[in-house]
Image (cartoon, rainbow over all chains, first blue to last red; front, side, top):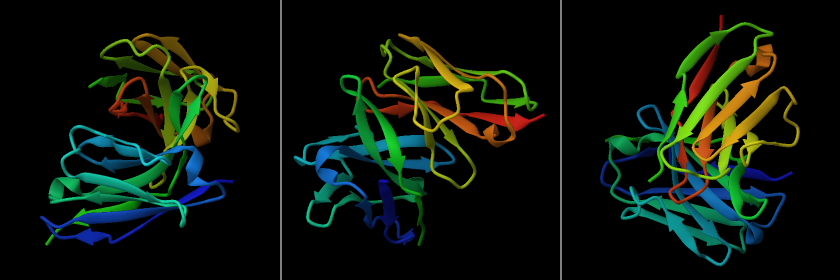
Length: 121
Length: 107
């Protein structure tokens, strides 16, 4: 059974960098796409980015200038960095696995429990 | 970007009712449409992928249909554990995007 667990600070100051890590157990991260998704009361669910084991990435254009996603194959982890945060970045952040089925149709089949990040001084 | 619009935003229903939630895409997305259920304080849980395929372990009272721009999630007979918020999500083109959610409440 695949399990995902987010970790990182729950409080970040405005203009600083939000950094989160997703630890994956029960499967190798080599074979799938891995995504970050966030949920805030004002904007609902928002896909942020995904990364594949080749380190190929894709970003939401609305966040692309401020987002960096990376992976550590040796630790079976992938990470998110969101630069220059504001209060609008306050949200629950989820990591998830993008599973491809039936010819490149993707869906999020495994999710972490989510971690609340608050941006405040 | 593809916009996903769900209707209604919320509904009240009773145990045993048949419930239908609609999702409309701003452009055709073939059958690249997924449905999730979310309960308070929990991560979304996949129900249906590729418009009509039931995720393993999900009860058969859940079903999905549609193609192109219009999609439907149906719960054939509502159970107490089905009271939750439901989201559609397109995986046709980047950026992946979600509907705003439909909250199913107890009447």
